[in-house]
Length: 456
Image 1 (spheres, rainbow, N blue to C red):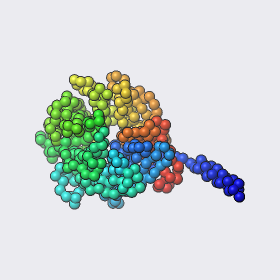
Image 2: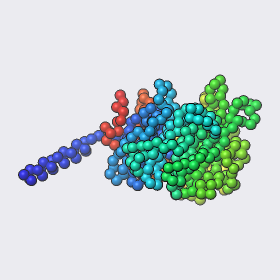
Image 3: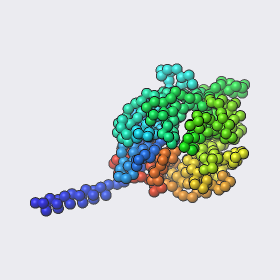
Image 4: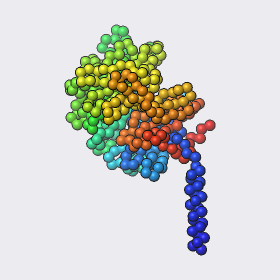
């Protein structure tokens, strides 16, 4: 009897393994990303697991996790409910895309859903209103994404929410405190997200002092942030001349600015080491932190990085105003501080290519850029020479038939097999597939697990 049972068990195992091996794997983890689904800091590797977040159905936040040892996926699970995306409007807001961080106790935190808030949420003393509500949720258990709870300890008026985590475990939440005419602020938690400090403004929005040429215009800002050393946050930003023409908002932006936030000393410094007074106004920023004046040319902010000997590197996309609502910035422009001045200029990188900056151990500036070549979406590494202007494509990171990929920032504390999140639009829909990419290509998944939405 034991002999027949052993044979039966062996045949069952062989059949089970065979069935599993026949299961089709795909290169994406989910197909329910919605709109423009990822924001900068959207992933973190923690104790063997990579956690990622993206905007899903009805603009709600979703979280998935990959266990690198067992090679198994968990989720995606819906982590909360956004106020945005709940009307019949065909316009997708996209400002409330989720940002993620894992605290030192292993709890996962996500902030999402804000586009400046509304008057119904109270008085916004640091800006104006638009819609949505910034919401903070936390996993109910450490390293478990299956259950979530809302934590009411951040301002509801945020948009462009970004979590940053320092080496000592302090968690910073940066965001614009309202719609365009609002201060940029941060809140900090020193107790693993249980509480956050009151909002601290570091860039001030205000009416333009000389509005003779631009009546009813405001000084406003767009910001890129990155942890530099263990204790410092690098901040690059550009100026937004906020105004309307014929009731249409104009997305005019100029110049590039740079400063550093020492989170231990609680000091803000410019590139020369001078201590700054916050919040910075346009006039004070021009005098103390302006890196490059782009004149009449419009730009969109790029990325900021730090050489290993302490000199910063900044980038943006620059071009002439083409008369459209958001201008026509196309070409990536690259500058670095040499100890005395900012040097650099336009590069030979492909127009419209967008992506992330990485400075390697040899202090060489590299970009991981997404572009589109006819019918193919391409992600490739580009390496600079010493001039910072000439770049050479050195490695094709990933390519797939379809539209251009959108990229997150590099995953915090990334595993070599999962360094960045990418999404690619599903043709004819508002949905995208979500990819987790690393040195060995995409992290694959069983097809029926990845197809959360059975799209035609």
